[in-house]
Structures are given as structure tokens and as C-alpha cells.
Image (cartoon, rainbow, N blue to C red):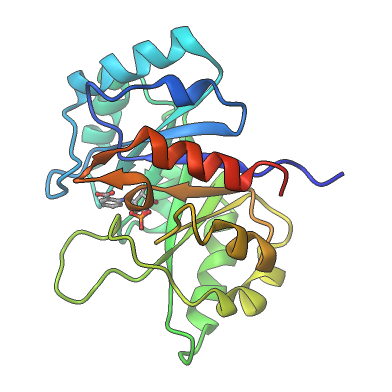
Length: 223
Ligand SMILES: O=C(O)c1ccccc1N[C@@H]1O[C@H](COP(=O)(O)O)[C@@H](O)[C@H]1O
């Protein structure tokens, strides 16, 4: 039997209701440590979320960083209690290796080019980053008019997965970008990732919406 799809709900903020994290499908939550993002959470505030989570269940916490100095990442891990570091900027393979030395799991986000673009560069990166990272995360390229590298509710062309998936070598990989309750079944009909990562698609007015999260879980259940 195929392994159940894991789900990461990203961009949680202090005060959010964490009831959904007891659902066995929800394996991870994400906290944004990118000051330019509207979802930014200071590390000490994040500790409240991770503390609450640890008491409740086995769901793991992921901290999202963009081109952050290693000493800041180290301090943030200590202060917040996150267990996985997601690098969502231009971090090099050796940057990823340095974060791995801190004793956390490391996920590297890679942007998927437009459908008519040459995927060679992405395929090369997949091979290089897989050598040091625990998982890769495929996301859409951010819109041109922003300096924030993720969380825009924009999907890449999933037809690209036909080219990319064979190069992932059966290693852990996640998909992000514009996933929501109404398109998730279509997504899972064209690929079989380790997990799916959702932020904008389960928000209303910029905050997590429990009803949308439940709709998403219902859609994924049994796929
Ligand atoms: O969510 C953010 O604000 C963010 C900022 C900087 C880097 C990454 C960010 N989020 C990541 O984007 C995807 C979710 O995208 P979507 O909103 O569902 O389209 C996920 O990997 C987040 O970790």
C-alpha cells in the first residue's frame, strides 16, 4: 500500500488554534522567520507554538528561513524549539550542510521554472542538494514584483512534474505553491510527493482558517 501523504500547514502565528495538528495526516507545521513576510513570528513567540505542539502530539515544527546567517539560525533554533529548518532562498549546498551540522533536519526549497523553460538547471540542483538535505521542496517562482520568496498562493505548472519526478530518485520531496482544498486531489492525481505544504490556500483574511484546513484534510483523506 502506498504511504499516506504527509501535510504541512505553514505560516502559523501565536494565538492560532492548533486543534487540527492532532489529525494524523498533519505531520508538520511551519513558522516563518523571514522578517519581510507578513507571517513573520519572532523566535520567542514561536516557542509558545512549539511548546503547545509538543504537548499535543507527534506533529513536528519547521522554521522557514531565507538567506539567514548561520548564527541567527542557530539562535532561532535554540529560542524557538523548531526541529526542521526549511531554507527558502539562495542558500548554497554548503550552507545547507552547515545547518545540518546544527543537529536539525534540513529541507531546501527549489523554484520550478515555467513550463516552456529549460529544466536542466533545476535537475542539476536536485542532484546536488539531495546529497546533503533531508528533503527537497518544490515551489513556484515568486511573482516578479516581490522580494518575499514564498507564500504567495501561486502554483507552478504541475505538468513539469512529469519531467522532474524521475530525477527525485525516490528520495523525500514536498510540493508547495497555490495548493488549496479544491485543487489538491487534482495535484495528487498527477504526482506522489512525500508531502504537501500549504499556507495561503487555508487562510482567510491572512490568518489560518480551521474550516479550510478541515476541507483540505477531507480532500486528501483516502487519496
Ligand atoms: O509564507 C511566507 O510568508 C514565506 C515567506 C518566505 C519564504 C517562504 C514562505 N512560505 C512558504 O511558501 C510555501 C507556501 O506557499 P502558498 O502560500 O501555499 O502558496 C510554503 O513552502 C511556505 O513555507
